[in-house]
Image (tube, rainbow, N blue to C red; front, side, top):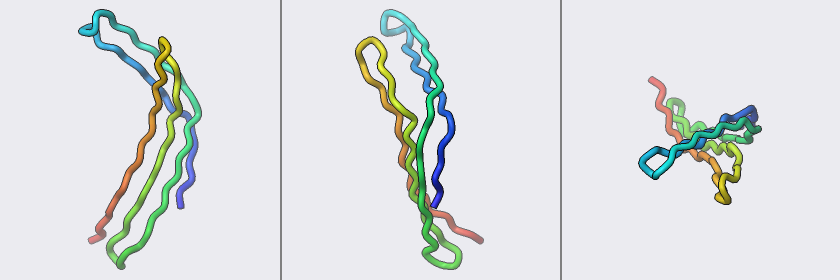
Length: 75
């Protein structure tokens, strides 16, 4: 099991092709965790999740999250 937490940088950048360009940055706490299983002596699997927070900009809400699945082979 891998609990985790630290700071995350949240950046929103709108390209100029939309009629205007804007860039905002923010630092917020993040939360996450993960689990690992040994499937065989040389094979393991992992699952991890990270929540980087959410923010509002011009009435819209943006949320960043990440989920990962992994499979590792040891030679």
